Image (cartoon, rainbow over all chains, first blue to last red; front, side):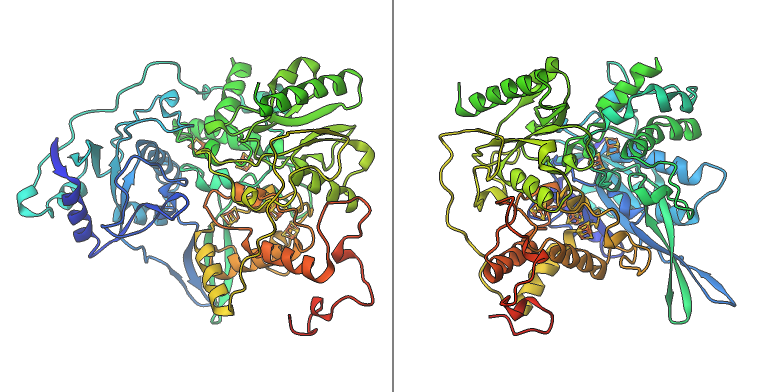
Length: 326
Length: 285
Ligand code: SF4
Ligand code: SF4
Ligand code: SF4
Ligand code: SF4
Ligand code: SF4
């Protein structure tokens, strides 16, 4: 590992921002969010943004193609982006997203384009924030290798290590005097204590009736905000918009919490109640994605419990489900 | 024991009694079980659980919307603004007066995690419940400050401010879900035809939603601030609605949810109603 001053890091970011879009944690006056910013104002403290950086590799809406009767043109226009300051929970979430979009039966070309164009600079957390429970998911709050460059905050300086060729190239753009070569050698630590998790062998249907979903989720107001700000929620729908005699097809975030998510054309809704929908959210995270990819799709970032207006706590719900599943 | 803790004890005593003598099947109140001290809604149905009930300056969520569609009689721990919401739900025929027992809390105002007064509480006009079945007093609650309306702004200035707020919005609809008054089975934003919501979080869609919602809350907003408290993005969601509430008061002299007898401003017509309340009527002034 090598040390570089935060000021030097800002210079590097400014340099990278000449040819790429820079996004990072920013203070909007009320809350910290992830957004386009500049090298001078990007936050370099330990605060966590209320929403995850996922919109920069899985945008809230993204044009996929434009088509007419005669031809279809795929949208390959992806802005190269530097994602600065992603926390280990966000990076682990990216690992899950990558498994979902790239490692299944189909590889998603749009996600792939974002991933190959993006430069991801992670930063380890100094301490747990209220609501964080990454440790209870077996993750290391200080480190994840699912990024191009990993930083460790030591006050005025960062300890720097690169984890990819892309990261190494980016670091080569540092001002002469601060050049660092610092390939990563460490691995994530496994925290002590029990890990929240369900065995991928569980027959999902057994959890439909044996868990008291209505009681566990009675206070949920069905807003779906938790799914928007979550780093691993990845459900989407398509929307066609007519424009200039052609059709533009968009992919837009959707949410299992919304009643329209599963509403059939007949009017029947297989997930009729909020409890049914929240069950989907929890089991998708802790069971279905695990069955499909081997990873649980919750990294304990704590965002949903911090921001839920009525304090619905997915950790408590997951633990209650574990009890029943035992 | 602090005044708030005394109030909390009275809530627990009352809940115990209401459940024991079957006056209510459920008591909806607050439990100190959220992140960063936030009190979260809790549904108590068994006397042995009343110990979970608390009352403090982080009893933030408005619990009124949980009353809609409930079976059996429900008691609700209601801040004054929440009690106004309950009253308006009764006035709008969404719940029956006989099905609800209002535990009206005198309210010292709620705070955020850092202890700063919430925006809505800073300008609160009603800090004792207008309608209640029992009142739990707090002698430290001071009379409210006279109403502060935002100063009139020009169109350009208004648009600039609105745009600035909308830039933060991610169109998650959490504000709608938190609002007691947004109980429509299908919100206009969720309708397929016409396509109100272009499924893209662009300015147009965001403005359409917030303008539409502001109009739908005209004469119905109880100024509880649940919408802005719900917003994780830090949008001043309520700023347009505050303006509309001000107009309704000015035009019709009506405050929402203060009395079970009042006719809602937007559901009645008087021949001498000011023309400005109609499309194409006199200019505002
Ligand atoms: S859990 Fe909370 S944030 Fe998520 S949909 Fe329910 S009320 Fe909204
Ligand atoms: S479910 Fe909640 S805690 Fe888990 S990753 Fe998503 S936002 Fe974070
Ligand atoms: S619009 Fe906001 S302040 Fe008004 S009643 Fe609804 S949630 Fe409360
Ligand atoms: S915004 Fe309007 S249509 Fe939508 S739920 Fe609220 S009142 Fe109903
Ligand atoms: S104002 Fe806030 S709560 Fe409402 S839709 Fe926008 S981001 Fe969501």
